[in-house]
Amino acid sequence: MIIFAWNCRDLGQASAIRDLRALLHSSKPDCLILMETKVNDVTMIRILRNLDYSNHVYQPPVGLSGGLCVAWKDSMDMEPITLSKNIISLLVSSTPGSPWRLYAIYGPCNYSSKRAFWNSLSMNSRIDRGVANEEWWSLFPNANLQLLPQTTSDHHPQLLSCFGHNMFAKRPFRFEAAWVEDCRTYWVVNHAWALRNHPRPPTSLLNKLQYTRKALSRWNKDQFGNIQANIKATREALTLAQQNLDSPSNLDYDRNLRCHLDHLLKMEEML
Image (cartoon, rainbow, N blue to C red; front, side, top):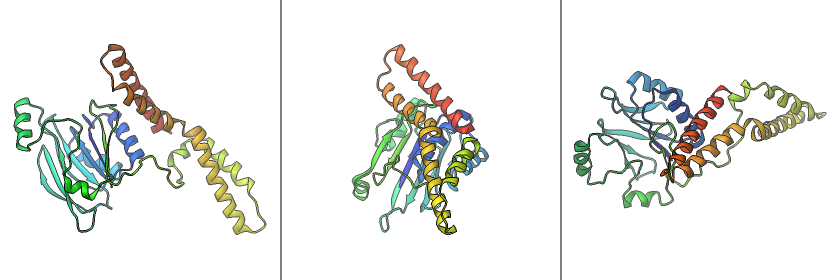
């Protein structure tokens, strides 16, 4: 089970949507937690539908402030328990016989309200963090929480892998819809399909399919996939840059990296 959480600071921005889509494409989370969405119910439902999340619970923003959402895939067994502008809690039955509670917490921005809120939870105020008790750790001893670099928001996205899943693990072959937008796809397929002939039609078909799959995978890695590699490299550079933002030059470098990442995401969107 993979959970993605992010204080996105306004999903009304096209750049935030691009960034969110790219992050979800890489990590394939089962559950999505979004804070400070700043969009109404109708817009939130449309965004989640486009991201392929069919179940959700949503507390809309008050005016231009807030907005808290938890969404999940059909494969997940999750039951909403409480809903407020600051907390959504759900009962998760991911492990047979051992249900557990998931809390999505968005603290108040007002200082006096913030202090009272965190005191009521007997917790210290910390941004972009996850907390678990010993019982939860006993269920998921290999869990890990990864902080991803800041991009369109000044908050770090969080990626929780309950079973220590590697989000960059090699996946089975899949024809990418974006390939159709690139005219080179035709020539890759045409060339590969013509090379594997056999006297027996069934064997010929199987050989052509296998060779075409390999040719497309190789082309995607060496040429088309360079954009994805650049996006990954830019995110890694952001992670390193944000470890030291004390000097103006480092702040400029961080700002330039964010702009470059947004440019790459726009290119990826057009493919």
